[in-house]
Image (cartoon, rainbow, N blue to C red; front, top):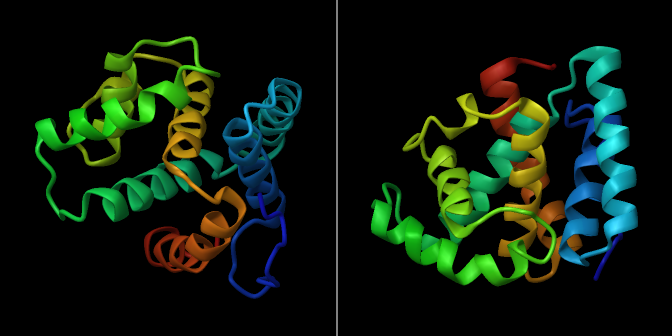
Length: 161
């Protein structure tokens, strides 16, 4: 696992939020329950303090990684189900959820499910971080490589927030 961080202070992402999202995904990738719980607490504290964009960061990162793996701009439900099949063994090591839940999380990233409306935002963020972690090989390096794309998307969609 690589935990070397690139210098990206000028990319307009909220650094505290990025650090929490990154730590949470890395902990999930390593199936480090203690670090994962600590990251979840930090995320909750951020949300209470300043309505953090952590959820949208996770949403974009999950979409981007799933898109990279499926290599299809418009994946079918079958494509997403196949990806869930591949990711579920790792996902299930940390998430207390079935494969259908993982499928719905992945479908949500492509606008093919309203699952996020059926659970609270904190649970959805936990599932997204675990789903993302289950799709990564070299989590630290891959997250750092996705950061510039996240920053660009976030700036286009939300400005400098």
